[in-house]
Amino acid sequence: MCQETSFSQLPMNSLFREGGFSCKCGKHPLTDVKEVSVGHGALRQLPELVRKYGGRKPFLIADRNTYQAAGEKVESLLKEQGIDFSSYIYPQEHLEPDEFAVGQATMNFDKSCDFIVAVGSGTINDISKIIAMVTDLPFIIVGTAPSMDGFASNTSSMISNGVKITLQSACPVAILADLDIVCQAPKKMLQAGLGDMLAKYVSICEWRISNLINGEYYCEEVASLVRRSLKRCIESIEAMESGDSQAVENVIEGLILSGVAMGFAGISRPASGIEHYFSHIWDMRSLEFQTNSDLHGIQVGIGTVLALKIYSQVVGIKPNKAKALKYAEQFDHEKHNDFMREFLGTSAENLILLEKKEGKYDKDKHRERLDIILAKWQEILNIIDEELPTTDEVVNLLTSLEAPVDPSALGFTKEDVRKALMATKDIRDKYSVSRLLWDLGMLEELADVCQF
Image (cartoon, rainbow, N blue to C red; front, side):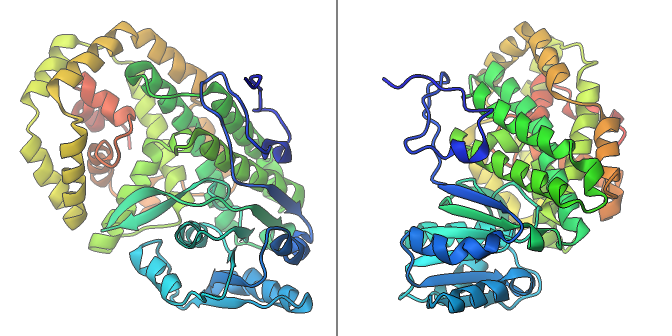
C-alpha cells in the first residue's frame, strides 16, 4: 500500500506525479496535467510540447481576441518548426460556452488532426476541454489572461438549455502561460482572476460545513492547496497594480493550483460556492431576459462580497427547532416553482425537474439535517470564523484593483439580489448558505434584513 503523502505544500510541478498521491481522505488525488510552464517566452516551448505528447498535426481553437493576443504567434511558431495544423477561430464577438459553440468547433474540426491547442482563457478553455474529451485527443492550453481558475481542472462550466452547469471534461497535458502575453491582458481580466480566487474563502467554508452536516466528502489536503493558491494571489495584489510581471506570475500560478485542487478532489466544490451561484443566475437571466452580465470572475467577486454579508448575519442567528420545522412544513413548493419560472424564465423548468430527483425539500431529510445543525451549531460558527475574512477585507482587496464590489455596478437592484439569493439554493445539489438558511427557516427573513 502506498504511503500517505502531504502534497498541499509541494512545488507546483511536483504535483503532477505519475500515479498521483495516496491521501488520508481515502481518495487517490491524481491529475492528467503533466507539466506547467509560466514565464517570459514560455510560448516558444509549444512546438516541442506538441511533439512530446504525440501531436503531429494540432487543431487550434481561438476566438477573435485570443487569436490576436496569441493565436497568430502560435501559428508562426508551428510553421517555423514545420508542424502542420488546422485552425478554427470563432467569428462571433461575444462567445458563450454553450451547445452552439461546441457545435461550431465540432462541425469545423479537421479529422486529420491528432492534437488540440486551445488559445485563450475562460470560455475557450471550457469549450476546448469538452472538444478534447469528445475527440479523445490530448491538448495544451495556451493561457492568454489570468482571469479564471479552470486551466487545470477536469470540469467545464457550460450553458445547457439555458442553465449554467458543470460538466466533466478533459484535462490538458500541459499549460503554457507566457508572461509576455498574459501581462498584456486587459486589467479587467486580472480583476476577474482576483474575483475568482477570492471566492475560495467561501467555497472552502461551505465545503467544510456540508461535510459536517451532510457527511459530504472533504479533503483537508485539497483545501490546504486551495488556501495556498489564494494566499499566493493575495500577497501579490499590491504589486499587481503596477503591472509587475512577478505578481502576475504569482496570480496565474495561484489560479492553476486552484484548478489542480479541483482535479484532485474530482469535484468543483473546493473552488465554488454560493458566490458562483449568484453569477450563474445572472448569466441565466442575461440569456433569458437580456439583462446585464459581465465576466465570470467579475460577477463572482461581487458574489463573494454578497456571501460574506450573508455570513455576517448567520453568525448572529440563534437556531430555533420549532420555527425551522414549521417553516419547512408550510413551505409552498408550487409557489416557489412559480417564482422560479417568473425570475429565471424557461431555464427554471430544468431546475424544477432537477429538484424532483434531488429532493432538497424532503421533510424527513430536512429533520435529519436540522438535528445535526442544532447539535453542531457551534462547530459551524467555528468554521465560519476560521475560514472567512470580513466583508471589508475583501472589498478592500477588490477595490485595490478597481474591481466592482456592488451588484449595482452590474445594474442590479437590492430586490434583484434578494430574489437571486432565493434562487441560489436551486442551482445545484450543493449545500450552501442559502440551503442552511432554508433549513433554519430563516432564508426570507435574512434576505429582507441583509444590507445588499
